[in-house]
Length: 299
Ligand code: PSU
Ligand code: MN
Image 1 (cartoon, rainbow, N blue to C red):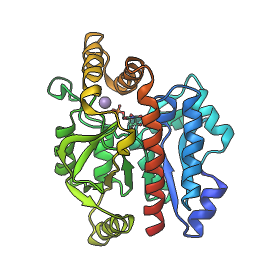
Image 2 (cartoon, rainbow, N blue to C red; image 1 turned 30 degrees about the horizontal axis):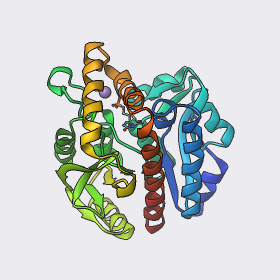
Image 3 (cartoon, rainbow, N blue to C red; image 1 turned 135 degrees about the horizontal axis):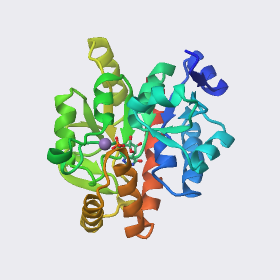
C-alpha cells in the first residue's frame, strides 16, 4: 500500500526474518515534554538495537505512515507543534489530508501489523477511564488488542484509568494478559496495583511460544505483556494516588474529555509531581523495549 513507507533498515530486517520491535509516537508527541521525549526516543531505539533487534518507530508524516524513522524524523515528531494524536479512527483522515500525526497504541498496532511486525513496546496502554459509566470513555487500544495480532509490551496501566475494569474488559475481549516475573499486575510507576496477574511468564521464550500458539489455534487478536518497573525505580502507589485523584478531579471540573483527556492528565501529573514521574517513565519504557526485543528474537 502506497500510504505506508517502511524504512530501508526495517524492510531489510523483515525480509531477512530478523527481529523487529515497533515503537509508538504518541508517547513522544503527547506524553513527554521536549527535550526528554527526543532523548527517550533515541535511547529506546538504542536499547532495541543493543538487545539484537531493529527498532521501528511509527508516525504519520505528510500523510504517509512511516514505519521506521531516522533521527531527523524522530526530532520532527518530538518538536512539531501540530502533531495530531492518531488512533485507528483518525488514520484515514491524516493520510488523506497529508497531515502529521503521532500514533497511539491502537494505531501503532494497526500500522505495525500492516508492515508485518508482530512485537511492539510502549510505556502504558490506554484503557477504561474512571467515570466510564457517565462518559463511556474506553480507549481504542483495548479493541485493537482484541482484533490485531501484535504482542504489546507495557508497564501496566496508569491509575488515571480504572485498572480493574480495564483488566475485566481485556478478558471479555479475549486478550491474553501476562505479567513478566510477577504475580501482580503493575500500575506503571508502581510495581503494585493490588490486582492479580491474569497470567504469569518467567521468560521471553514462554511469551513467544504462547503468542505463536494463539496464531496456530486461529485465535485472533493481540496479547498484552506487562513488565513491572524495577523496584528501586518505582514510585509507590500511595504517593501517586493523591496526585492522580487531584488531576482526575481537575479534568472533570474543566470538562476535559475525549482524545485530549489522556495527554492532559499525563501532563498535569508531570506538573504535580514536579517532573519526578518522568525519570521512572523513561526507565520503564527502556526496560520494555529490551524485553520486547528478547521476545522478538524468540519469535
Ligand atoms: N497511557 C500512558 N502513556 C501514554 C498513553 C497512554 O500511560 O503515552 C498514550 C498511548 O499512546 C495510548 C494513548 O495509546 O495515550 C491512549 O489514548 P486514549 O486514552 O485517548 O485512547
Ligand atoms: Mn478516550
